[in-house]
Image (cartoon, rainbow, N blue to C red; front, side, top):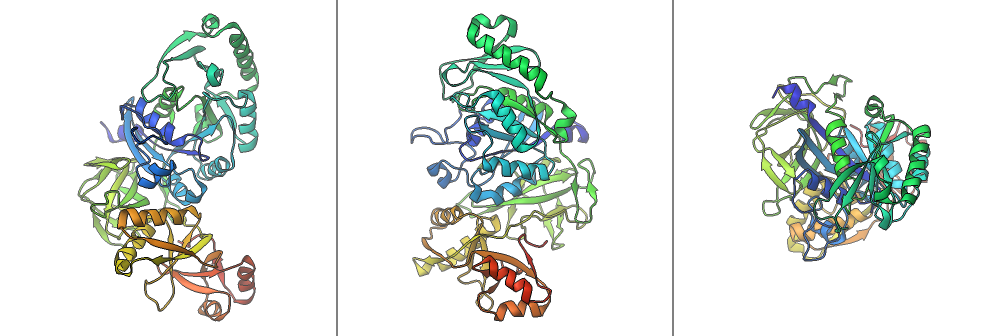
Length: 527
């Protein structure tokens, strides 16, 4: 297959949603219909049931939440799909933001009983900022919820984007029978009694004009009126406008019972965005079809195999052909790195890969040389525009229960900080001992404790610190000295050696700006 054809068949996308909208369930069902797995799991499975593929960490399986992005690679209808399942919980927003930097499009999942929720709105704005095309899947039609026309108006008005239904629901709750394919004017009726949908559900297509007997006169009349309304008032799907992020194609279904999943998967495989260009720090546009290999690290995951204490750097291939064993230059340090054991993924499961193409996600063994945001390139150093790290809002320190575990704790904190679970801040003159911990969300500290216990065999107690604000600092030495010697401020360093100020109020930050000449405070890590 030609290089351009390999690039053109790649589809790299993420699923975004408010917590509990059914994101992990939808992920499982997309894998099921792509025949990448044979039996779908349940997020809140009983002990005898199999768990989900994407939620592979122990804490995820126990709590029924996603706390880290998961990479899932599979083929469907000739397309090579790279699905990045992201955390829905706001406390893990940094992981989601980093992941959205590595995809070309997104599926926005909504609970049709709740419509646009706050987390959905925030994630959609990130997609808009990154100019990502977004398809919408209105989920949980097996339950009763808001009326379809009301939901369309809500999405259009709240998100300020045109919405173009691709199909239309036949009822909801116990009366949910299937969907109408608006392109062909056929109804797709789902069959089978398994409302949990662990196996693929069969369906059949019937011309809409012949569907009255099948779905009943009352339902047929109601749907006919709704179709007439959306035909005159709704937005029409336009592929170019979708790719430009101006219109969101809308699908209806139930991930739990499999209704509508196959239609969504077909759309993504056929119509989602192929790999796009990426800008360097100098503003140069690197096209995916350029022959030189380039890529960037958007995520680091520690202990995917706890027996080996290995760290994996997830790299998005931007241009050229990636080959196993090739050398690449790290743009930040100029160091040459041999990429000798690259992997592709099905969540925790991995396999060696000999070659990869733009749009693909490749896992690289990381011994500490790679960081999130690093650029890798063949033949010489270059830098893509970086992935931001946000100032934490919650702070604390750890109290070690067994002092003999100090080395294991330091190792665990270093690896998990590389991954982005928490941020570490060190006091000058104290080495790397007893760092302050920072997190965007308070639940990150719970995840840290659980992972230290499960993966490093270290038990700790978390002690909350009095700080509530952190800012990266730049400016002349006199400004930093003012912070160092003024009461109410702790001047520390992050794990990359950059100065950071910690304080307990926003007023203190404004006071510092007014009194420390030429001081600059950054909410996002300066690149």
